[in-house]
Amino acid sequence: MNAVTSAQKYTILVVEDDADSRDAIAGILAFAGYDVVTRTLGEDALSVLAVDGIDLVLLDLMLPDTGGYEVLRRMRELEDIPVVILSGLSDPQHKVHGLRLGADDYLVKPFDAEELLARVDARLRRVRSDQFISVGDLRLNLTAREVFLRDVPINFTRRQFDVLVLFAASPGRAFSREEVLDAVWGTRFVTPRNVNEQIRLIRQRLKNAGLDKDIFQAAPGLGYRLRF
Image (cartoon, rainbow, N blue to C red; front, side, top):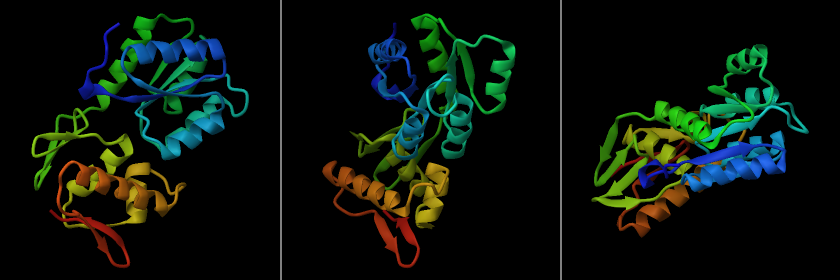
């Protein structure tokens, strides 16, 4: 199995109630270089998706609490990220139903490690874009999801990166916290405090990397704007 390069470091959420299957899938992904988060219940998976930086979801349909199709439907309300269904249900009607609900792929169990990794890599490749954003001394590589300050790399979580991209793409524009929630989280299910916390963490990482000024300015009565 090929390891993931540092420029392709992604976090994958595995939603699977069977412990043996869950551990096996997580092991395959971790060995290939992915960060892995696992959950047994659909409701727990939805909670993780609402607050953490997840790049792709592997979703089992037969969950003990909320049905897999319902979890998929609600995931689509929270995040526009790749979702691959993993299921022992091989009937075409199940595949069609899952794809129509918004799944990006459907992989029938049992499957081998190489096929799983190939499907995951294919989904992640399709969401990458060949774009760069430069603002002041910052350079954002949207393809690799990397940030550089005067050629020094800075590590951000997926959510922090997306917040920074939103502001860097429109420097000087004031964004309300609600606009940030809609653009980055895709929902207002989380509170504006999440925006404040992510910007606080971004500020801290930029400062630790050597940026000697606060580029996020408060917009009174609204939210924040980015000025370099």
